[in-house]
Every structure is written in C-alpha cells, then in structure tokens.
Amino acid sequence: MFSLFLIAAMSTVPSSFINLIETKAMFEGVDPVEIFAIAYIESRFDRKASSHTGDYGMMQVNCRVWWKHFQFASQKQCRRLMLHPELNIHYAIQIIKLYRKKYKQCIDQQIYYCYNGGPGWQRSKNRDRIKHYGDRVKQMIKIFKKTRKNDV
Image (cartoon, rainbow, N blue to C red; front, side, top):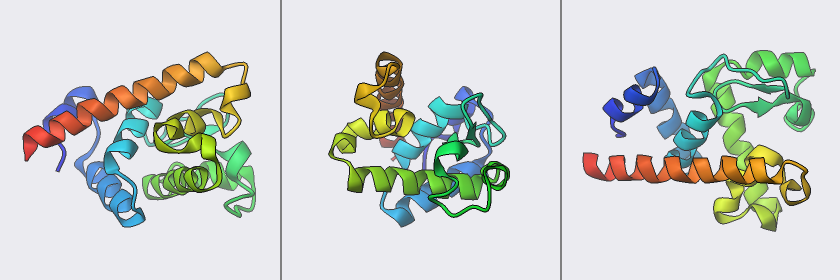
C-alpha cells in the first residue's frame, strides 16, 4: 500500500481512490505507480477536474478525442461519465494500453508524452510542454516508488 501520509500531504485524495487505482491498474497489468503519478500531475486527484481542451476527471481523459473510440453516444455523455473515478481510471488505463500496443513512439517512459500529446506528440508545436509534462510524471513515479519501498 502507498504511503497515505505522502499522498495526503500532496492532495486531499480519499483512500478509496488509492484502493481503486491500485486495484484497477493491477487487474489491467499496468503499474499502479504510473497511474498515481499521472493522476497527480493531471488533476491532483480531483475527480471533477476539467480543462479548456476537453479533458475530464481525475485522469483528464479527452472526450473530444476518445468519445467515438470508446463508443459513447456523444461527447456530452463522455464528459459526464468521465467524472466517475472508476470509469475515468478504467478508460485512462485503456488509453495507455492502446498507445503502448499500437505506437512504437509510446513505449516505455515515452507513454507519458503520448498520454499528454497523443501519438504524434513529436510533431506537436507543444512538444516542449509535452516533454515537460512527461518529465514531471517520471519525477512523481520516482517519489511514489521510493515512498512505496520505504513502506514495505
């Protein structure tokens, strides 16, 4: 289990979210630490977070991009459902798994760049911002892993 003290010190994340992230990530074969780090950087674990770019929920899933892929009836339905932590985490993990499987530029730690900027992130005018985002996620992963190791 992650250090509740560390996570609580960084945000007001309910312990139910910690359990939810760990359970869903492990079930899907994804490192829970990655999901914790992305959720922290994306929203500070705010399940109601939204952005001007169409990102919603704790993991900031972009409904303009993903609503058809995940077969939602509309972007509005996607936005509404992404405010439910269980669904938001589930679909974010599916995005990560899809990118890793389908795009060679999204393997290993480059997945964080893809999660933020899509598989074409290398050609983006926001490339520097995307790389900075990925570097912040990597930094949080190191912090969470160190904390987790100390808890054992």
